[in-house]
Image (cartoon, rainbow, N blue to C red):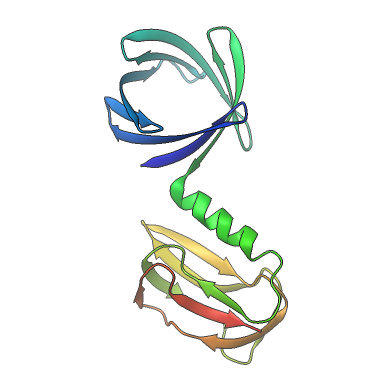
Length: 165
């Protein structure tokens, strides 16, 4: 699984290859990470160097104490980052808006129909991908111009699901 991690404002791409190896910005490291208790204390061995780590989870980030220095850490998996990017790009929607699937999956529900008025943030499609259901909402008040999918459809990334005018 690939993660986009921001530590004190610097961004890193981290791939978890297996239980003993990770890749950070393209460089692979041997790793051993063991949580020592429910308190957030952990032991980290990274390329043969041992570190004691104290991790406190907050609402949208982590406070990580490493070598006596407190770091602010945000972690997003690649899928969540793509979904957030799609939501941001639709924030200022004007005219016809095509609501596309950011990843392949199966349509679970399309609770709207052509000609129906929709409010901003109203769910217009539900897509299951990687065993998770993702709700797609209208980025604006408008009218459903087209519905191009139906429950049970297997769709690819970038498939237009619904358009709102």
